[in-house]
Image (cartoon, rainbow, N blue to C red; front, side):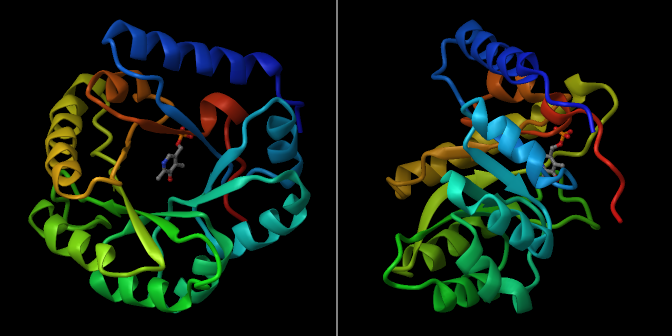
Length: 229
Ligand SMILES: *Cc1c(COP(=O)(O)O)cnc(C)c1O
């Protein structure tokens, strides 16, 4: 494996900062997406000061969080969560960004240890209404938000989306804009909702221009991913 060049993190942070400054928005948070990357790559980035990481698969994350347990990292689940893995996920992660149905809300709430800080939750929205995609329909956000808010072991922090990856990045703008409108409406009703998670390596500057407060970036930080074993 190539060592991670310090410049990958620094240049990504600089691009985020420039995009935010260009539209007079606060600096968004960077979530480093480490799926399919080894724990050593996570540790290397942590040594440079990046402490928040995103994983897609519960089992892979279990191994990686154990290997990096001494580093004080914050872990986010950004992949689809099956209800039968909600117990493991509620223990393992600090944030779950992919809550899209009430069954999952109930399961996560039940399995989050009440002695720990509440689990941070984002509602994943199927913003382009794609038949094959995870995420709730935009019309379902309010009901799901109320279900999350009713659970003392969960805290509703906002919304997450993965718009249709049109090759022409500009065509993703309307979806980002719809997410921002949904987010503003949600935040008006739920004061702890402060996070709009959208934007990846190839479109994060556009997402920031449209109001993202957290961007999820893998390739631009780590290089190309190894394929899934
Ligand atoms: C893999 C992934 C990312 C990061 O994608 P890159 O293009 O490598 O930056 C972000 N969000 C989700 C949900 C992902 O699955």
